[in-house]
Image 1: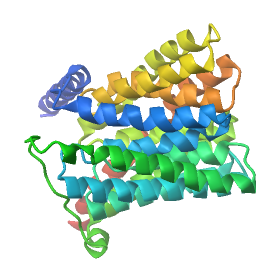
Image 2: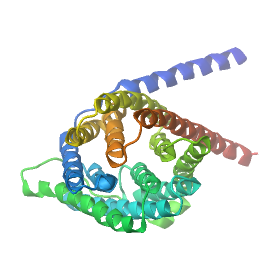
Image 3: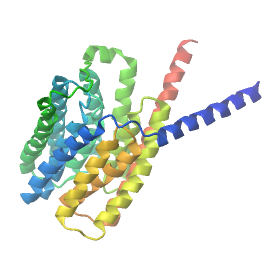
Length: 361
């Protein structure tokens, strides 16, 4: 009997690895991804060009956050897209202001970890309540971590609100341009909101909110204690496996995040090493965003090759730092983030399996 059990375990392990491998190498259909990618690229190009032309590169983060609204409502009705993108834009703006306020108090410390815990968990709750897909937690954690880590003054609260809201408004406007083309006959869907009370009564929703809150918090705290230069990057990486609907997808997303980050860092090094002028880096940011959005729903690993230069080049333009520390922090903190998330998910799954067994006597 024990031999059969061991054999069954080996078979399940091999099957699991096979499923993860298929998830790693599968590129999903195009499905009009170019429209969302074009919206995102224009959404980041215009406000970033404006702040650079105005001589305020430190506002690049604020200018870039709003473009995240382009990710939402790809296949939604125009009304549903408008409602979703406005809601996400307001949430991103509030997050940027909150992150800037935390940066005034104590930038880059454990307080940032609590902030990331709050915005990540809140992002999932809002997504479940209003039918937003994907959950905006990763964008909120990125925005909160970036703003809370910048050297800011009280005066920066104004651009945090205005520039972020302006770039989000541009993204919403771009998202509604399709109304001008009545011949567009792509199939579209509405939103599926859920009452908060129903969410609180759902034990699976409570578990997911816990994971979304705990993952970025634990990863950021570990990065702070280890003395890494950009601890919030670990928090961002920790949100990535959480979005997976199954164990297979979670494992694949963790792997793709790390491998894609390594490839993206190589691209970033090739772009930054020669010391190109600002306008060249601006073009690279826009092109990287275009690549990321072309593949974000098709193959996450390829998308990360674009996400990584987009983030790192924006950070470099806003606040130049030694290349070795910038790229090194990204590698180490990405590894910390995905490992924390994978371990957390495993612990939570084990706990959920044990509870019914104990209840049954």
